Image (cartoon, rainbow over all chains, first blue to last red; front, top):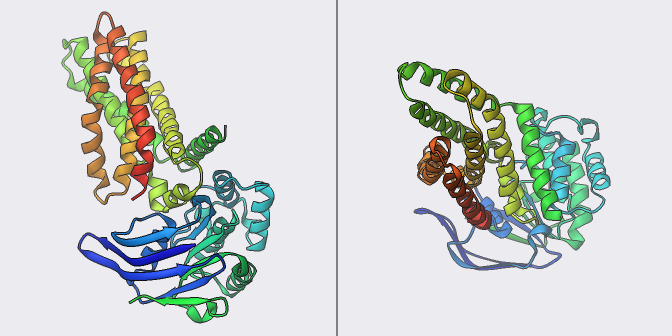
Length: 194
Length: 212
């Protein structure tokens, strides 16, 4: 699903990634670890097609609409409600039975009661839950998750554990994290960036 | 049909955001009216109508620039542009939706600006209104593309005017010409040609602006 060889990314003079090689199959779960500034986020952006490599080869054999990308930022409009945000994404991502799917995800991530509240009024944890709803909304076959537990309380983390457990056997995952121990039970491979 | 539905959803979203946040249109209205008031006092009492028409176009152009500078603010501040770019819908739909919302903001600003101009300077005729309407299309089309380009830069506040103003010169020539010429048809034709040409270029090139 993803094949990278001698991948390098520079921003000006600054080299963010160097010599990265990876293979991710359709049911693989790759953990990406490394200190701050090691290029974890950049690697995910490259895999998502949001940035282009400076050198090396990168093949991502997944259609754009089949990628689920969880970034540091929730990628939602703060002036729209949770429901409006997911409805907009559902429309753009061609989600079948959109309203039912949006409702189901809001329920699953404990945001149903806050569905008519603007995202700007959400706490950090609620925003992360909303971002997870957005990421899983279109049933992606490749999931690129950047620090998925960031901001989540224990209940939210358990909800995410359950979601990952259900999806891991039949989706490809690349997950950047500082908490590899929490995800080790799902992982099929690990990449340590330096 | 799906493409148009995407465009409609994106444009509606922008209008809804503005309705709730009110951070672009009120600024545009305040700016254009206060600029016309200043020009009213700056121009000598015996100055020609031609000068007033020129100043109207200056006011409209800079009002548009003010709106354009805010046009991708929500996408930039919350990184939403990444989510939109990753969607399987045609990326030009993002441009067209944004262009339509900018067009609506310009139209609303001019609903106030043109009566104010008539009050302070001289009556508004059909050629002027036609020129403004055609100019709006070009401003929104080109301005949206350039605003998306500038958004990716750290010097976005500087970059947008530097990119936009040179490309707006044909709009100013056509608009002022249509407003003051005895036979405005030629200038309105120039504006229509500019609109068609640049709308196609911007529509086709937007994808390359929002991806690396």
